[in-house]
Length: 116
Image (cartoon, rainbow, N blue to C red; front, side, top):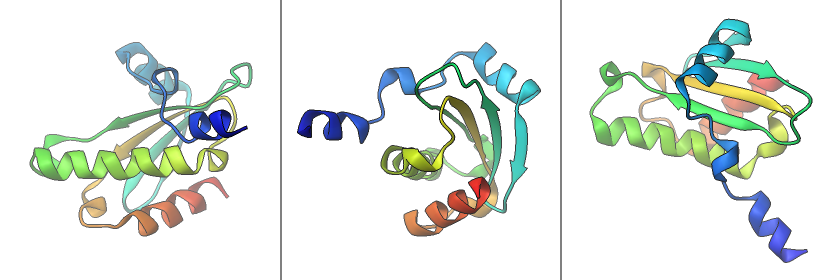
């Protein structure tokens, strides 16, 4: 179904982690994975039929343009490759300085190795 294909490649509101207490829960109870470009906190709640993504980036990383570009790349990796992320998981990505200047393909490759 074409409508479903279009929907599944989106980044819907229900797939976003927005509330501070949701971020805190993932930080406290989730599994932490480290790479050069980001820290990844993973909290799996298998009761939920979809995945959720939250992104944080400190001002120290760069100006607003740099920070927003990093967030855009992470969102695009999530949007196009949802099957890489565990079903029902809350994933919080904390962007590190090394991610600045990386391209989509490099970030995707790094993200895939985090889940394999």
